[in-house]
Length: 376
Image 1: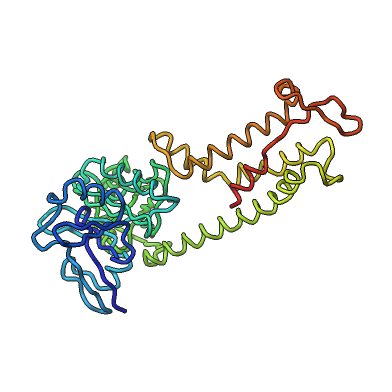
Image 2: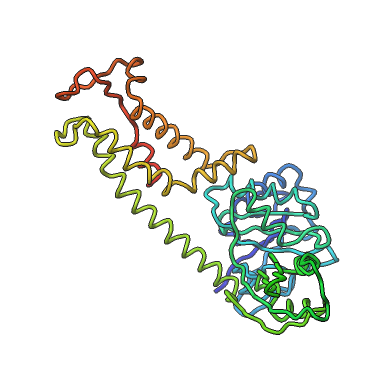
């Protein structure tokens, strides 16, 4: 299959011309971008990013090699080149699969935070492919710090594998695990390394496209330890690991959707009937709506509130903020009106007209707004 690949002139990321997040024209040439942020930077000062040859376009076919970075066509097109050294000693570049993004604003916020990190020369996040491309100096930062930055913003990463090493430290007795952990965390492609002195187990999470078990084992042995046993867990290819994670995410969202839909339907029917359905017009109807809406808001919609809080901590707003604010306001008001109806009756003067409940406040509630928005 023939695909047209172009290089984003701002971050250097290889992208599909057909699915680019933006395009600009300068001096008669078209330039393609992985994200709106890169396009904005280019439009502000295009001369700073243009090389003599312009925006290089490459047509790739199967089993051909990309001369720019030495990757096969499959690697260049599917993003499995997780980490490789940049030319001219510029450092290294890593591609991180990002999870939890819901809009382009999410990608922009991650990109800005990554670009602020010490040692990072360029950072670009493509919302369409859910992937971050970062160029960095390995002497100043590493994959572990980059992943932690993404998590601090409120998102996650996928595509890592794990290996456990049982070591013999008799040749290098040490009362601290930190030296070996620091040594491994500096390795190319290592996302996290931990050393349990009690069990003599070294656990390493890594990007399979960047390094492998043998390379990590050699690094441990070079540091003075002898590896007695290796246990590989989740060592599938990075793309397989990422696909598995996204499948789990999809199943989780599908389960939450159906639960929210089942619980929201009766709430919606009650709200839209406006008392015209006799058997739904009873004194405790607001409490019923409250009980049905609580799991929808606090379980099915939890990710929206977590995302909104993460955005708030970074003084930003995104789609999570919009959903959390709207549904949260509707739920909080309705809950208070249900629990303390007399406090709201003084404001609107509405009272119950049902037998035995005359004179008691009948306060309108909006549980259906919160539950239906989250469900959809």
